[in-house]
Image (cartoon, rainbow, N blue to C red; front, side):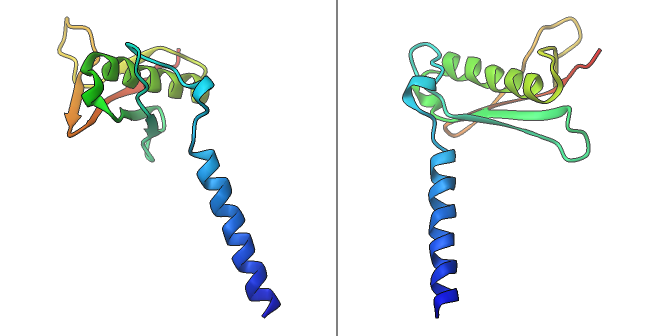
Length: 116
């Protein structure tokens, strides 16, 4: 009985830590065109330099959401590889990227961190 209670308390504590870890303090939020767009970037399993960055709340302003998605991708490359240079996926030759995708209220962009 005591062991079961201990596991429940530990589970509740871990849940609380997970909820707090997922939140961004208002003071630490980066705004784009005056709005906050919650985002994330994830690397591919086969090649961690390849990533997809996406943000929500695109309905608040598509240009701000696009800037936020680029920010998330750049942050991913800097934190994981120490570079801000990105080869954006889907960019036609002679054009500059990135190429954005929109699905519902999310904007995403894919790229690959360039390591010299």
